[in-house]
Image: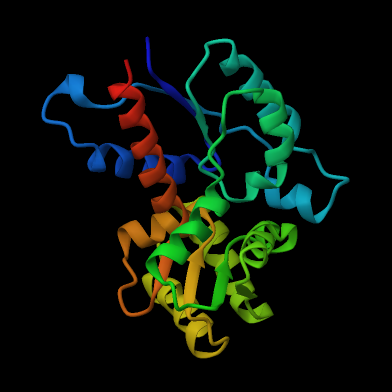
Length: 238
């Protein structure tokens, strides 16, 4: 297979399925041959990223992710995507292992999208797993371009973890009321101008039970768009 990319997924599987579904839906295809060439690595047994980030005595996901990158690099994909926000904690190590094969940086692309779509926004709310909040990936990307990160309260963080782990990961159920309350409270209580959905399970919630009242930027949706743009350019290249 020529002109393809590799998706390092499975964190979690249903969230990866949502990413793929949106990618295929947005591909301007009218025949089988017009869809994108890609390899999906659905590595479901990668240890939990948040568990390790919060407690380094737990099993690290990094060796599993490095194995995926090294195996797939031998096939020479044009680029990698990593549809898991929390896994970007390991981005530098993974990019070093990939060598000159680029890995799209979902948080960085998301912050750039905020600047394009909401140029007047200054206070940017961050929602995600406790690992994503603790590893400060989105904080650092926002501060790098002069924007102010707005973190969830402990109560909002607890509600977000309940939605991600108890509802979506455990039961594949989206509690629409809880999801919408999380976004609303980030705007009304924390005074965020825009809210980042910084977990692919939250992106899954947005796909199934869309939040339309408050301004959000969905990290996974941004990654879908950037993946599609790069893949279509790859296809057109001589």
